[in-house]
Amino acid sequence: MKELAQKLARFHSLQVPLSKKNHLHQSIVDLHARAYKKYPIDQLIAEMKLETLANNDLISEFEFIKKLMIKTDSPVVFVHNDFRNRNLLVKDEGGIEGDMIVVCDFEYANYTYRAYDFGTLFSKAWGGMALKRKPLVADEVMRPFFEEYIDEMIRIHGREKYLSDKRNTVERMLLEVKVFHLIPIMFACVFFLQADEEKQMEMFTRTSKMVSVRC
Image 1 (cartoon, one colour):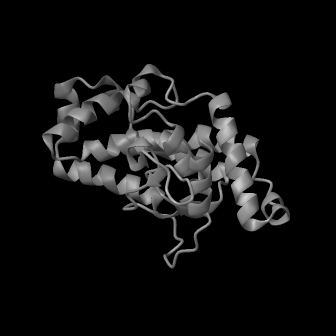
Image 2: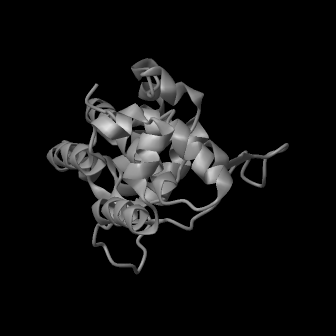
């Protein structure tokens, strides 16, 4: 856990020559629009009896989440954007510096809210637990991670500079993750909504049950 927190802190500290315009909001809207352009979505929802999607509008749900995201005021940093178990490899033996974790798959890395990586890491949206109305791990599991993350950020940026930002506390990060863990769920829904592979469409029927975030 300590090494994982350190690696994420180092990643968030990178200065990369890319645009810092936040595309997160628009990407979800675009995927939703692409789905309705490619397929008769409403007809498919009716045929497959997807009650959650029939009774809730995805874009309205996302606008609700978007307001929470903006209000949270999570710092914008360089994020991995897919920081989850599938992209974290564990070595059989430590390397030169004793590190055991290799982070991979940087395809979606860009500048956006740091909490997006927090939410993706601690969300259970990509597994069966997402269907049980408790798609987030407990505070006592996340707290030690954020303590290690902050310690590494202090080492990189200096205590006075880093802690002068009131957002850089464990309690604030716990708040951020409780909002941003909804984003992987929403992204999964719109991604699989426009997917055109049989396997992806099967996953869409499963993730459709996650949509009603206000419940």
